[in-house]
Length: 499
Image 1: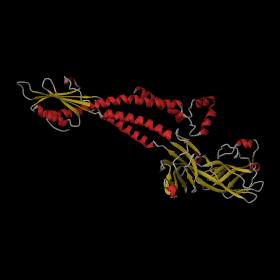
Image 2: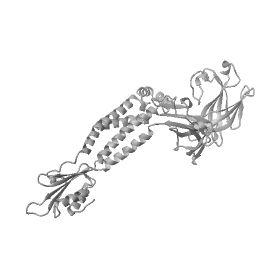
Image 3: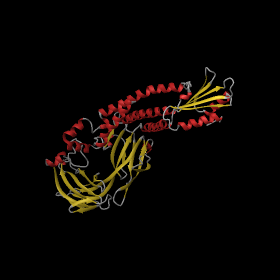
Image 4: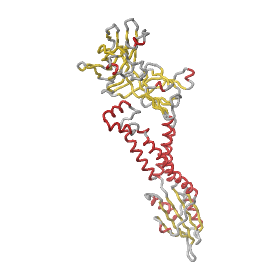
């Protein structure tokens, strides 16, 4: 048990870096920024897995050792507990007067009557009646075995919590994705449908639980100072047989009201805006693009991003890579100019506007490497393959004309919603173990082990009456046992039955 307590302390200590340092699985950019800002110290922490605490070798070692230690504690204690439950209460001590609680008196009742009264009074206690060598009769009674039961239940619950938590991490997964709140469907068909995806050790992403959702709209409410206090999205979903029949079920998705379907949970995390740009090329071809931009300032939803557009109708791949467009900059939902700098005063889309730089050239879309949807590759700008054409501030409905006659119009904004899909097959068992721990802890703290002995001795020759000795012993904390013993002894002395 001492080893288990030390390991439990070490586990809590080892978890602290996970709360104090950025974790790579949660925020890669912030982790890289921290490493770059702290030089050799950041690199040392990275090599020793402090940015991946919960998957590190040393955290896993403490975790496994704690589980082994708990098993080593519980196995012998369980056998001892089983033996103690089958054993009879201990023999009545020869000298009861040495016990912490002792009462001795003489009554005119017969020994048989006293013994009957004692059995009735101690109903519910584990008890055994014995005949002693001098002709006396005694009863040994014990109560409070649920204390040890609670102790074992607590530790078995902790062991189960560790095991099922590990199983959940092995067979569970968690992914985040941005979905447009325009009724477009999104399906949980594979990891390619996610923006970020964290898979358990036994999950390869090819057999995810099948379901589809579509967010029809999004509503946000704010306090007077612009702080959000309500997010809600009217959505529809289908899973199971609905995927075959095409039926959609409605659901109101909120921050603390996840959708539970197909064994997964769908959470609403955040929202943002997607600017809508319409590009009219010189040949009259029109392309409309709605791409999510990420909030740079969360309270006002001032956002930044990049909208990338391929010019249609160009068959030559080399020429096509010289005609790609990128619209980058800032989006202000409620715009106002601070000097010549566009900013936002509120998170609502009351007066959307953009401050954009428009580039033309090679966006690197055909390079075979993944790139962020929120920014362009600055190395392409540096080597001249991507050239800036203009910088403009555009209100909703305004447009700018490029040097070749291409028109770029800002048509407004549309909400996107960030959702998280979580799958944890052991979640229910984790809850059961947590509840068992609470019940076991309550039992081990509230229930008290105590013993009572009653010896009934017939009157000696020439004497009258029956001698009654009552003794008690608290096996654990004695607080409060004196009052209980007093009630029992008083009733035995007075001949009252029942407690």
